[in-house]
Image 1 (spheres, rainbow, N blue to C red):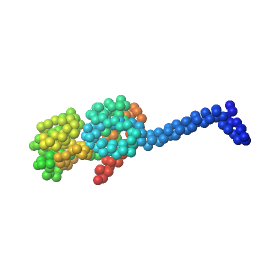
Image 2: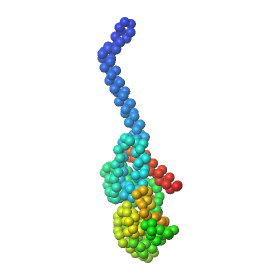
Image 3: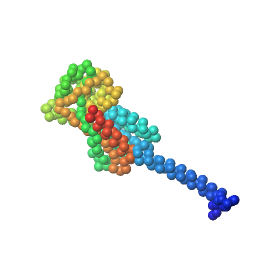
Image 4: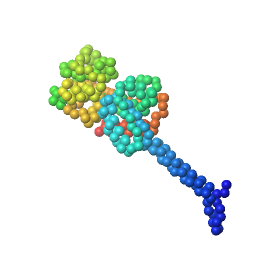
Amino acid sequence: MQLFVREHGRLVPTAEARRIAEEAQHLFMQQKRINSIVDELRGGLLGRLGIVATPSIGLGILPHVLAEFSRHRPKLNLELELGSIDEIQDRLISGRSDLGLTITQPRHPLLDVHAIARGRMVLVCPVDHELAAADRVDITTLNRHNHISYGGDTPLGRAIDQVFSENGLERRFCTQVRHTAVALELVAHGLGVALVDEFALADPRVRGVVSKPTLPDLPINLYAVTSNLFPVSQVARTFQSDLEAFLAGKADG
């Protein structure tokens, strides 16, 4: 195929050459676009990030970190679901979510679990409650107050029950809840006092409550969970790293 002809002493491209050049230019532009997409994917700037978390995490810490994370990633497609530990496991194993966040350690062979932050349970009470003046609150004394708490079939309920059992007591409570966010709302409205994970207090909407350390100390971990069945995306890895840095900064502060 002849691509050039000589006219008046210089080479001139034929119609075929011009058509090939047009197609080549198109390919070069596509390659540049693909390279740009690869760079964005590699840097966690593009793609989809599906997170499933327990309510205290999803309503407390996550909005702060996600706001900053997505501000630099306007093309990122975010999906946030709140659920119980069973729902977290189901979404991860089915591939509907990329990253799970919970204070209850999952124990499933198809899941990878990493502790990314340490915290503790704290006592929350209304600002005008008598316990608001205490330096530290003995957990076993909560039977004397309107105690908002978790059922004995929940991980947090079992942890609190163990403290009472070790002291030869049975835990009593006036109101049973399943989620920390509900307990905080009830305390804020003066219905009683509650033990909650301190991660939930990062929610700026939590007002009208005072938090106090407890005796004994009840440590908890925040776990990042992924599925063994699917590769973890770069954007999920990047977000987990940013979340760990945020939590480490709060701990140092």
